[in-house]
Amino acid sequence: MPEYQYLLTSVEDGVGILQLNHPQKRNALGWELHREIIAALEGWAYDDEVAAVLIIGNEDYFCSGWALDVLQGTQGGDRTEFTDLALALMVAIYDYRKPTVAAVAGVAPGYGMDVANMCDITIASANAAFGSTQVKYAMNGFYHAMLAKMNTQRARRMLFTGDPITAEEALRVGLVDEVVEPGTLRENALRLAKQIAENGSELTTVLKEVALRAQNMDHIGATAYELRVTHDLVQRGLFTRRIAEGLARIKEGTSKATERLAR
Image 1 (cartoon, rainbow, N blue to C red):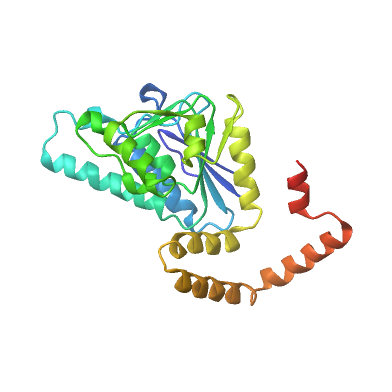
Image 2 (image 1 turned 180 degrees about the horizontal axis):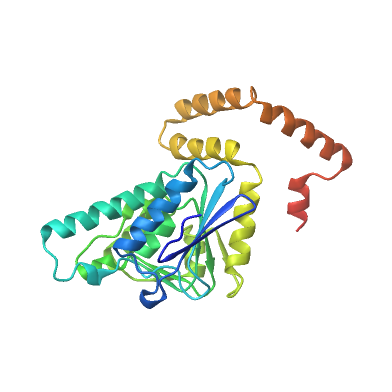
């Protein structure tokens, strides 16, 4: 597994864990960290041992946004190169071919929040706060990623004001899916990522494709597309094995879904 300067990577039970690790800048995204995240994601994209990816900072902070000091004193060409690099990172996360989970603790301002928003699911520590703070620096936050998870009015309010919201408010408006107690973020986020990864990379890749594409179709087109996906899946050996296992579990009264609901 490659070694990175500002990134800790590992694979656990089908989950690629991508931990931002630049404490001197509270994981601010400069040149190096952009490139390392892109490289790590590329390395796992077609690795059958990785079925889902967890992006996490630590229990105190996730990512403090762009490393703005790298732009200070630069000229147009360098700034263009940096924004091109940022685009490459956002596309790498936003359009990633496997499910992604972001685990956020502490303040996640600006681009830090955007990175979390571009993941499929965000789990937050109760100490987290989110803000589209780019407006303070005469820049724009990434509205599309906010709008994908919450309603139009709140997304525009955050975009226009830069005001932060708490983890509980982020849960209420749909920006995060779950809020957990401080100190338990990694445990809880990894548990979710492992549950997704249990399905294996063959299936999670198909499901992620559905999630990415169907939401942009009209209702009839989406229904037809998803049924074609179902038709493809039931032809596979994976379906044959899973249906036999599932029916056996139901007969035994040990359905995984029922077990999880009981928790």
